[in-house]
Image 1 (cartoon, rainbow, N blue to C red):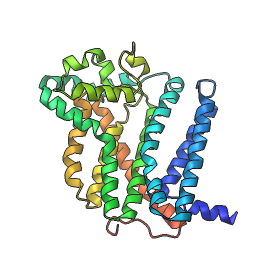
Image 2 (cartoon, rainbow, N blue to C red):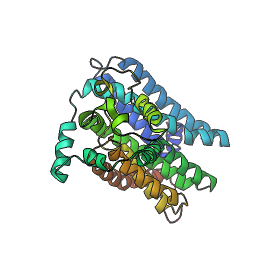
Image 3 (spheres, rainbow, N blue to C red):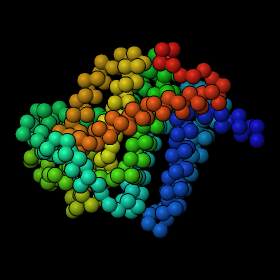
Image 4 (cartoon, one colour):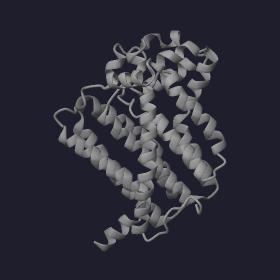
Length: 316
């Protein structure tokens, strides 16, 4: 028992988040097995990821070399995408009602019009191209921050940043479960006319195809709105981008000079490119504030259990 306790205490805080969330997904699969077609497969995969996370931490602590240290950090990147895809198979059969109507009404109550439609009057191909490129960079932003901290040998700051990002992602995924929605591309606009009504210059249609494939709507899908991922509220792009911007500023990383302008454009792009309602962005901001507040408490609670010094931005 003491050996097990000693081993578990060696887990990183972000390992704890991964394990907790995958236990939650296992529970969802088992509880709703009559609604989820591949529930048994997903349950075994979730269990496999929990075991992998435990073994990953074990090997880093046992061998303490660069390979296992790198694996322990970077396994998070593909895991975020894998989790996102598992949600695709869970949310739609469990939560059979979309809440786009609610978000549209809130936007209209706040502004008196639909911002995603209003911005169309000020669109032009060069701006669309720039914003589509920036929007498509989203998943690279955490990697850029991680590499910058790793190069400086700031392992404490890197641990906290990885924890904050994965914790933020998983909180946003809980939002998708609670209030699933598909976004204004499908509700306020004609998705099939996107490239004609909001054209870019050259890369825009190709980047859109990649994003569509990631959201389970490859070219030729007959009814995209019926099969697309339910991931509009809160805006994960807004939430995670704000977390990365905040971390880069608080950690005084030079990457902040890149993240502040790029992140600002990316957040604006979420509405301009018809991916999100404005209330999704507000939700992303609220989720980000809660995530950073609660996350630091959780992170330092685990540090105290491990008998280590609490995280402090000024000392990291």
